[in-house]
Image: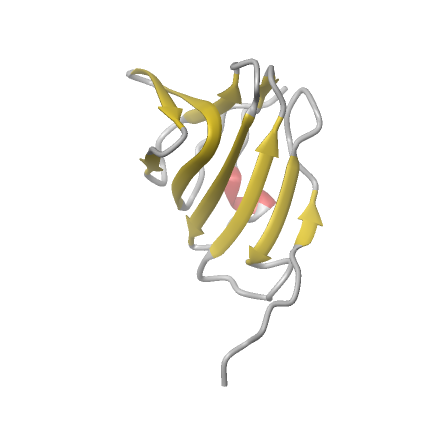
Length: 121
């Protein structure tokens, strides 16, 4: 039987400024560990600690731009574009543009604080 998800759950975000994460599918909102789908909204100047996650992440930028730092350089991903990051590689997300960013993130398997492996602060 299909599972109706009437609303997301707001989950806490890491980073130097408040960021909104509304999880629709995942460990918190739907009890799903195979995939997580979240709507993110981050302000201008937001920076997340670097991480080496145990999951693949697919991100679609709806508004603004996200920056993805990685060992070989930096990618700027703008509205209407997407980025795919692979598990086991070091990455760091930020939103340096004036308007911040709005995006959808899909993680396989589902995101969890125990499997993101953030850099020590």
